[in-house]
Length: 233
Image (cartoon, rainbow, N blue to C red; front, side, top):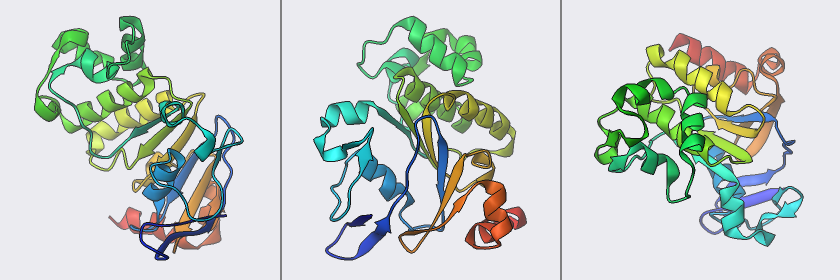
């Protein structure tokens, strides 16, 4: 029963309730501005809610040490940020990860192939990672997320900028990195989420529909509209 507003009582979320079991893959979909990214920010407690309660492993988020809570959640955003240095530094982020762990993360995220061609973990990264293609930057961001072995993986519109040629590789990478961990998708591109255990459709700050892709499509409601609109695109 979570209520949240950035300003006074201009509610972005209005009595939202849902439960995610450990290891499940779930997704939030809906039109722009319905509160999808807000939910992600609240799980990692970047804002405090006004009413209701958010529990992670049965513990209210405000009772978690912030460092522990945020270490348990890896978020991959639509706009990938890579900094000047080398690939190892971009994966490690001062965590002291072993080379073996970083190498394994590159394999799982389908980035090992092109990284090897460029010289491995010591391959240079220029400012903002502009020496890589958009797809390569995205795969590296998946590698970075998974190298830190999060209990919860969040992909926030992570495939929005990807061209069709790269999409197959990205989908394979997403499938690999979400194995065995709780995964939360916010997706505009619905092909990313068709295999999720539960899809929550948000509308006007509330959960309007929920179910699998097939169940929701059969309802002929908001989700069906979103799918049909995308097919036309």
